[in-house]
Amino acid sequence: MISDVLAEAKDKMNKAVEVAKDDFGTVRTGRANPALFQKILVEYYGSPTPLGQLASMVNQEARTLLITPFDKTALKDIEKALAAASHLGASVGNDGNVIRATLPELTEDRRKEYVKIVRDKAEQARVALRNIRRKAKDDLDGLKEVGEDEVARAEKELDSSTKAHVDAIDDALKRKEAELLEV
Image (tube, rainbow, N blue to C red; front, side, top):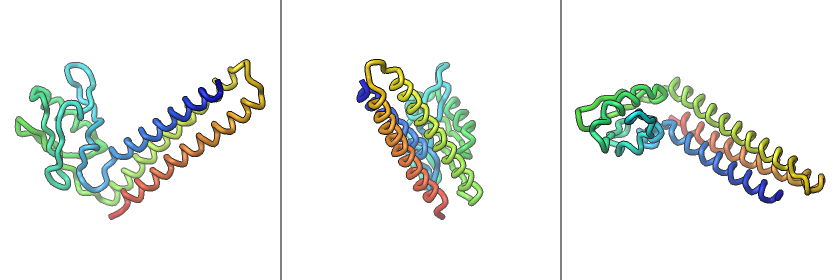
């Protein structure tokens, strides 16, 4: 019982750390990277769909990304979604077949803005970890057929696991901040 609760919590925490690292990858460092655009939601036939499922993306130049929709009727919707993704600051243009998204040169102010975005994403990940911990602790407290000592030991293990996962997010944050502020 206790081991099941702890294993489930650790699994969810590992996933939360991976999601945080993926989110950090969507914040630009120096080059136009298709990962920046993968999670942008496009209104496609009435439902929000990630851009990565609607188009192929290729680096044309260091700051330019070429986006080729699989369905040409989605061209306008993709262009609108890219224009609305203000955190990228990309200028978007289409020639009827493909979309070119050109990212602006990174200034010091823009880099600091990106650092703030990454810190916010890290805080969201920490909150997710704390929520997972709280749920696991509630599950442990709800176990009737287990002794108090065993529950207390499990809670200590849960706390150490939570701390290790928070540290992993903080390490990823430090690496991303250094990457962003590097000129």
